Length: 314
Length: 284
Image (cartoon, rainbow over all chains, first blue to last red; front, side):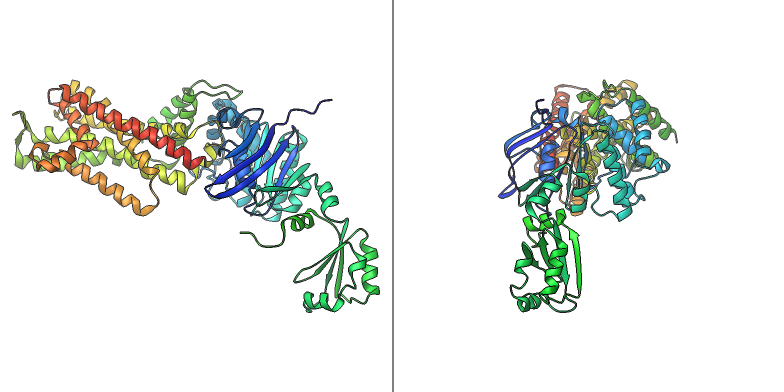
């Protein structure tokens, strides 16, 4: 069977703002039904890429096709089939919750009655039916985000674009959003998401790219990325109040044989290993005397920090 | 109250007529502009803007009563450059109509639009739909013109009732008032793209007030010093005031075409340049 036509395809895609290069020649394909993620620190170029795909930011160089069309020439036609949930909710505070959906529906040419029907359905879906007549302003952050997601679904889009959908939400609110996105995925809605939360990418994405400084530094399924850029397990050693660099100096290369790679952080030492228990045994045999030991599976966070470094990017 | 009801009915009508729409969501340019208009109408209904709208009519009316009739009582009749003698209220009323047709759309397109675009980020979501930045500009302009038309209509009815113009004059002046609104709306949108913050709003307010005072509004322009006359001839409000006067009590001639042409030109140029600049702001 031939591979289905990609819904989104970019080749050597570049976005410049003056001298600043936000996106530096990326290639990507998003296939129908896929949950695709952009993972990266702030300023990695995720949002710029999303805006180019959303036809609200013309590419500076390279080619971009969405639904096989050119975003610059066919913006309105492409946007008619996209659902966009921007990073800032940008909801209309002068309208009620329901009106935010019905008025937005008119921008897609959805007739009044149909707009109202869809609004009821979507409010139900994001659990805001009780608040339909309320103003937007007093809603909680989680409710606002859910409303923004509902609004992005009003035109029954072929691709749903989510720019950091759970940033700033409390754990309950995050889980509710994830649950809804997962339901949409089960219905076969293609979704493109940006996030800097590893757990989010790990739970939701079929495939993702890690971006750093405008470039794609890794690509694959969460599992593939962990296999490729990290080890199966990680042992975390803590040493009470002792400084970890002093510990590392004291231990010298006593730990080198028992793991594939080690990383010294200010508060703990990480040992990347295939077999966590064996490593812990080895650590005790070599008299490292940690105050606490934790064996855990490797996560995307390990991949992410390995690839993009631990330096803070603002 | 009446205005509120009127708005509700207008909203229903607009919804039925925002161009060709269907379930699949294909939508033409008219429909997209209509969607922007509809958003404003819905918001106005929610905010109970009826009272605010009433003040829009009250302002020119109060000026007409205080200056037109109050000061006019001391002046009596004035003689125009062409020798025609008219009662002062007849001279001032058209200027009040023109000035009110200017200030509403101008303020809404400049400060109002700026606040929606920059502070409230309202259009960040709109540009993600098939609606284009140019259509947002046109929709917003139409909304401010719809409001201005309501003021203008009420005002010419009052003018006619007070015997300050004929029915024909009133009917002819009404579309000119809308044209004045269009010119200033287009200009306002363009200025909105250059604004940076609250401090700039004061300059806009000052500019509007200066035009209001010195566009031949309260005294014939021919009485101004020559240098001032040149400046005044450049302001769009002067052409608006002159056009309305030609139609309400004067004798329309070739000059009228110049006035109207100037207003059309300012509006079209403003809207066109504004659309391009808004596009660059929203779709960087």
